[in-house]
Length: 264
Image (cartoon, rainbow, N blue to C red):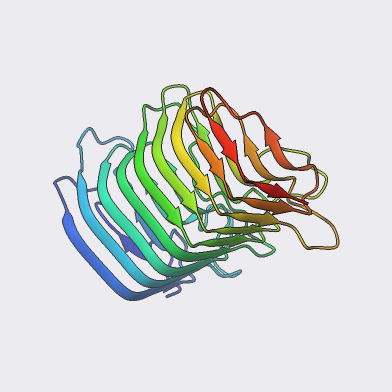
């Protein structure tokens, strides 16, 4: 609590093969860095491979006192050149970060589960659940984002932005609620409940039974679901309503299928 550094660090500035981590009933609040983070030094040429990490019943929270410049960029941040294998975050709350709820960048993750997690913004927060802003040969494969709620941040709910050499493949986004995300009047596709886009590979992702809406007096969530540059994906059983621009934006992408979605 209230330290100037990380809450929980796995493989941080280290080498080797850390594995079999189990964190249950944990909290990290008011820290100056991400409550949960992994990153090796930018100058390091070592490779850390992390396997079997399970975080359950967690509470990661930033505070106004610690959210200064350079503070709390993400609740969970998996960063820099280390592969992750079989990692799960279940039954948790993330709130009050400056940048992202969950941020994946410059790394590869094989087998990620996020289930029953609430990610909630406030007046200092913005949220992209998944973010990848650099073209860095990253691969995110076999991910599940289920039974979650993302609300109140001005940078979108669940966002995939694949760089040219990045790949997001074989994923599931289901039974989630994305509410009141985005910035009023921006018109940006990124300010949506769900966005699948980018110049890289985004394919074979099932987006099913999610609800995306905005019930504020001034609508901020631009689109319920924005689909662009995503191939071999399925969009079924989603409900979108009362968003600023449109309930469903963009195009389906090659060989993608849509059925039984509802907008009003």
